[in-house]
Length: 66
Image 1: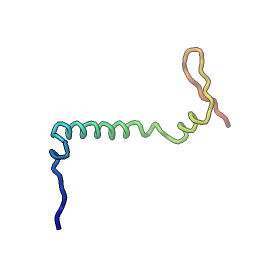
Image 2: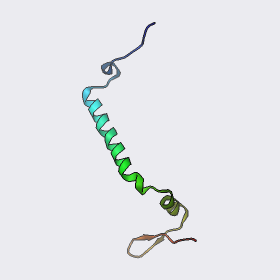
Image 3: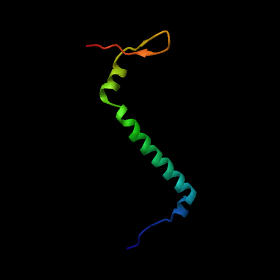
Image 4: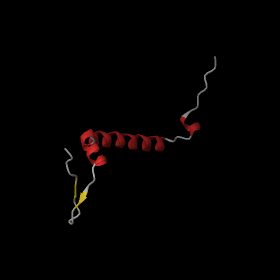
């Protein structure tokens, strides 16, 4: 039985590219872990299903529809 395998160099991945991919991958995971508590269902549905009111000073208010 023959096993088909390519080295990383044959694929086109240099050590520098592997380090860059790793750094950006770790950055993505860390940023996702930091921001995921802010993405709760209640807050997202409030923004998606309500009509925001923009005030004169530029702030946005989401009225409660209870």
